[in-house]
Image (cartoon, rainbow, N blue to C red; front, side):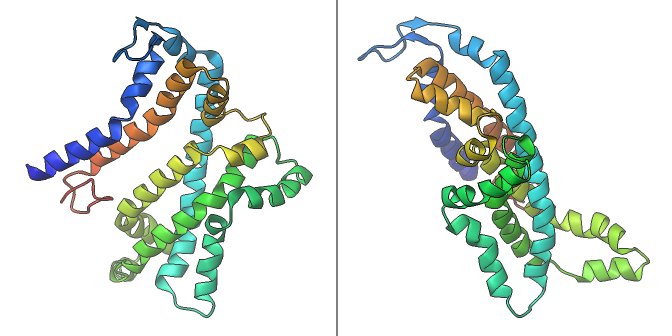
Length: 262
């Protein structure tokens, strides 16, 4: 009971800042010192259903899902090498993996933008996906490397001794054991990509329009209704994904980021 109260309090604290956004999204006018908007409007809802916003939402989803899948695929290979093997230069490899996170992303992106332009990747969704791997792969490799370090390899050996090949062993034994860490990694990399602005703006060149770009544009125009409506739209998918994954994993034997319980 105490745990449910604590979780409820945390969720309430996280959702409380969204209340003013909800108010501004439906406010036709909201003057100080009124507690609630004096007049309501549907402009925020109409804006969310606008064709440009819908297209930007689909673009953001496509890019974020692609980045999450690719980051997890790369992280599985890098994480296995880091987590299970001890080799000369291992610390250097770990440092190089974290370098994109340590070095300011703006400086790195300005450097690689020349290569993206040269190979025709600038101003394309593919280029945006590739550049967003820069901040997501380090997290994926680190998280999955920690998961591999705690993996009991006897399960893989038993599967191989029973005749399972490398691919079947990986799909039926290794992946299920890594599932909690893999779900966490996929969710984290999705959220990083979903909210990315600077990298998308520099590599996308204004040709690849995502929700964060529309949100910052609305903030710059001082349109509070548009900014609030777009802000809620940007926040909604991550919140729904976290709640859905936490509910799905709750009650299983393996806890996930402190939200699921055994």
